[in-house]
Image (cartoon, rainbow, N blue to C red; front, top):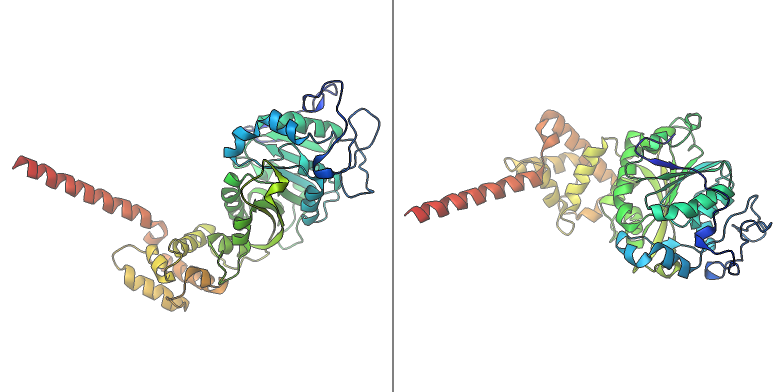
Length: 394
């Protein structure tokens, strides 16, 4: 059962018509020249995957671009970074890169009008959980649920707050050391959600909770091309960033392929890439997620400067220089390297050394450089105000 803060959706009446069509249906069409599909109730099967493969159940046709724009008011929603992928050739390709989904349990994040959903169902999944925040898409997803009886469960809710540890049957759990379980997360993520969501899930990987309570659950997700390049960047690369370290120390990360922006409705200003994640049995940095994230964030906040400058912010102003030198010397890291030049082993050494320093001085665990800056700024303002008041008294 879904958590109480989410709203499960039941299948609609079979009398519902797809996307507000009138009894005088238009001719079957599909996006970007895909093969025609059959309407519900006409006694024909709907082809959803590669040519020659016919699904065992009927699915309603994808709406035309005009219908999507009119029904879902896309122009008003571009601020929410919603971009829909309706070309079944591309959605099939995304699902193919997720791996073998035969009899698998899949959670699709943000299915929207259901393009990827259809390809997932074509792959022969056992169960499909759809988590959709935008209520406008629920009727279309209900039609898919009706067309695939017993396979689809729809939750109207926010993936950022959904309790993923309750999303799948308990019997699917596997030991972390075993092969990944028959569970997959797939999603064409809105740009505004993708980075905070992957950070949240990477933290779940580190703690083996959330969707990773079942084992090394695999993820296949879309990101802006630039974000995907950051996730997979090697040392020395222009896109090497905090995301590179956080993701690669916990997962095998593969940049699968790029989807041009014009394939989406509405067309985004950037291209999109599909990225596949498989959690590692052993993380490359064996420290708590919060500590690794703190060290990595500190290093990259001054990306163009020497790494020494960023690492200074791990320590209070009193004794900062001495402690930073101690950290770099013990970790055997050249202080004149730029953040993007540091290897994973160097980040491991920095994190391990910083952990030892924190154990010796527990106040370092909670020290926050930005809070110190705010306090200094507040003190300066108070001092300036007091001086002004004294001058006015004279």
